[in-house]
Image (cartoon, rainbow, N blue to C red; front, side, top):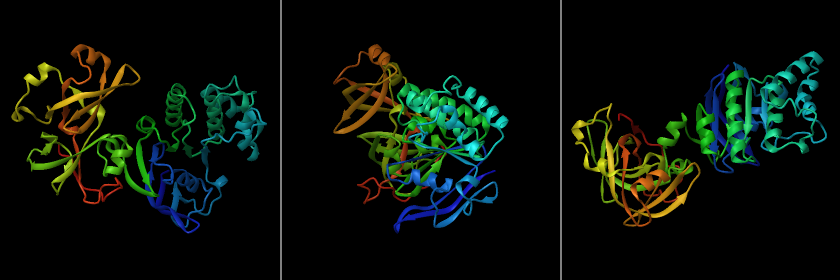
Length: 389
């Protein structure tokens, strides 16, 4: 029951929109598709659904070639970004539209309407019209319309983008629960990184119609293969560095911001690198930690190397949600962004222009090969990464 795309390409008016897209998505797993506007995300869903015909490559599911099949024959559900509900129909009529088109027995329609409406907690809304529903309620109706058809594959095109933060969180939790319960294979397009990390068993990053990286969410966000992917996944701190030594313990010693760092992920060749540090992986070091640093010999796989970074002062304190702040730190013209809690700032008496010390585990220091023509942050050739740390 695997969904397979093999070198699928789409041209529109002789312009390439998708170029040799390939992946295998097992039954019951979720693939999140990330990319800039115009990257081809929605077109990819339309091709899988059969709403657009691709020119090259093959799409198959459960051993069936989907290419010759119409959208109705593919057993694929599609939840559009604008929900695409019929405004003159009640919620119940919208949900049952597909079953009625299939001429399903009335008993089957009633059974599935009752079951799915209860699952999505919209059974009290069935007689209302879309204009009488909130965005989150409309989203649930659109999802219910797909689920009553018992699709084998569910496609969602930025389904939560029009909702407020609280509604997005509630519906993301609900959709993940439903996807796992019904064991439906899901392709999920979003711009939201938190959604991607939560919803995806795998994440695929598209740029200009090409796959630039695919892997588990943590792999994509912690070890981007290019500056483009690093920028797009909000790595934020991408600074120049130089590898001085590749050590036998799977670490590399770097020159960085006037000091040294040990990195656990680095190119196997080349010395000029971009050092990628996610703000959530950096933390403020307490004075006691700095005084009790251990030597390199005391570290092991069970106790990985911890780097300390000095010389940065607080230039800005930007409030965030959940009792946290984003600190902008400056050192000799280089900038670092770090998340911290309000409590930590209060405990350490930190304010603007105060110098701080940071710590980061070597396993969170990721390096990319620095290319001479890298100024535009486009995807360079993916480099092999050492991950022995």
